[in-house]
Length: 99
Image (tube, rainbow, N blue to C red):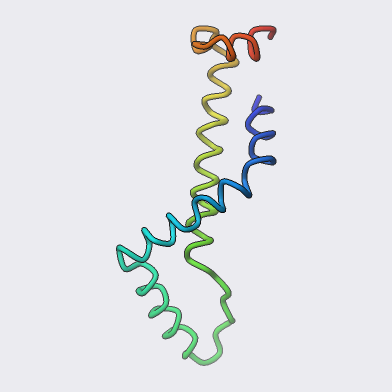
């Protein structure tokens, strides 16, 4: 069950993405990924008869990063729900102890 993760994903996705966006963008720029992507898209758009692609590299990486974050949070939540030994703090014991 991932009810807590689903709740946090619904409440925190936007604020977390806003905090991560400049970090992701800077990292992609530092390694040259944005420039390479822009060069590739420039060449792609010059080809005749290809469909228009409206993709933003930073947004794509951010979306996949967010998917990964919440995947691992859900995985840990499931482990905490299934194994009482994983409930290492008073808060975890209180939240997941009545199951």
